[in-house]
Length: 113
Ligand SMILES: [Zn+2]
Figure 1 (cartoon, rainbow, N blue to C red):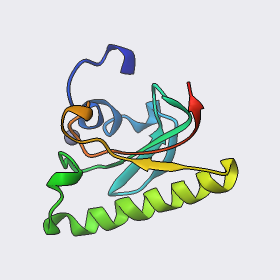
Figure 2: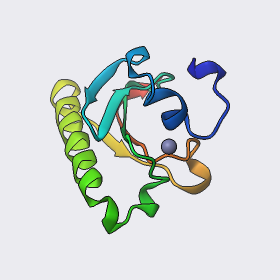
Figure 3: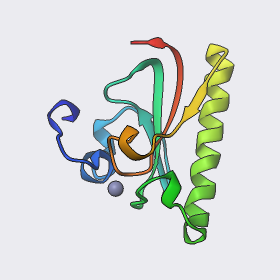
Figure 4: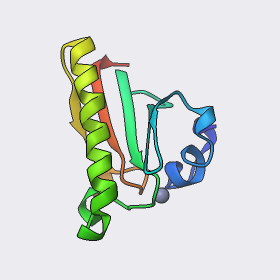
């Protein structure tokens, strides 16, 4: 599925409507986290809000509830990744660096795949 997708919002179009097709790490009413379908690193988890928010720089105070939940999930996954692998990085891309125009936060560890 991911390999054929050519749009600019993989999360709204593919991931969030059909999480059963993903390797889900966490799901609740606001947030979905799953192992990246095309991982760049040995451990590569993506955390997204289920509601459409374009990017980290478009977050506003109106998104406070979902932002708090999102960061709580990122923190829990980063903590577990650090515990199990000894290191982790938390990353979100912006502008031309951001392929999918839906806020997503990468938690990764280990060498590039
Ligand atoms: Zn979206």
